[in-house]
Amino acid sequence: MVRRAGLISDQLYVDHLAGRFRFPGDAGRLVMSAEEASFDAWIKYYRPDENSVNSQLSYYDKGELLGLLLDMIIRERKLMR
Picture 1 (cartoon, helix red, strand yellow):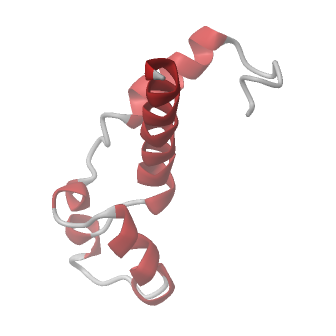
Picture 2 (picture 1 turned 30 degrees about the vertical axis):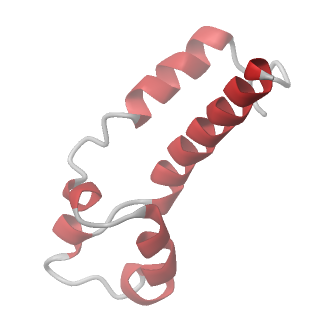
């Protein structure tokens, strides 16, 4: 929406997405889905423990990527009709 509104350039948006795909230092991405992260957010994110860094991820970051992928799938299917 920010790109479509003209608030950022296409290149800046692509650069932002490229950074999101890396999940730097986010070990939790290997053990937790976005659904699980969202469900557990009200419990675990507000009461972190010593293992939180290794077992959790940002559902905002992963959700952004899932939204992008869903959008791309919908657009591809529209083109195939």
